[in-house]
Amino acid sequence: MNKKEELISALEIAEINFLMSFREVKPELVTKQIQKDTNHLAWIIGHCISHFDLFLSMYTDERFLTEEEREYYAYGASKEKIIEYPFSFIDLIDAHLKITQKFFNVLEGQDVKKFDEIPHEESAERLADLLKRITLHIMGHTGQIVLLRRMFDNPFWEFVGGVSKEQRIKLRNEWIKWWEENKSSYQ
Image (cartoon, rainbow, N blue to C red):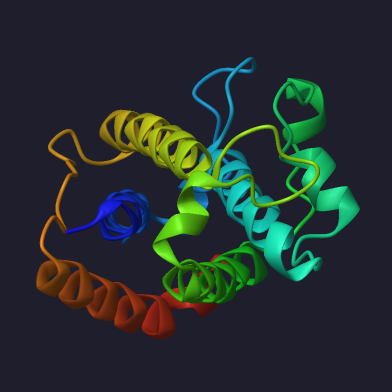
């Protein structure tokens, strides 16, 4: 694998583990806080999706999440502000699936040399460094989701799968099937 393939593969592994971390979560747990000064699952998930949205916008100049959503999911958002979840979780997840599909397509379309360049005038990092950062960021928050899942409803919940491309494709297809069958429960 070349640098491009390695970076995309690592991000794909992080993204499938992110999705798997909240597969089959009970709808009533999506906005439950362990205590008042902690983020709930919907905030953590939206926060991660907002990063994918930002990185995609460097190439498309379009945002899927509204300004209000981006402010809600921003780092340092007031815990009092996030207690009430004012958005549709269904719309959030559906946006994520569109964002990541477009983002991975954009990345695949880049020449390997572009990974050593700064992708946008508002960025101070090379594309390779941005991808390393988002990969680690998503995995860190995936760990938070797993810990919350263990506290809420399943002490044996775990993650880190999808290392091979075939396994990622299989897990994603299973996840999409689950989401399509169950998303109406998250209203």
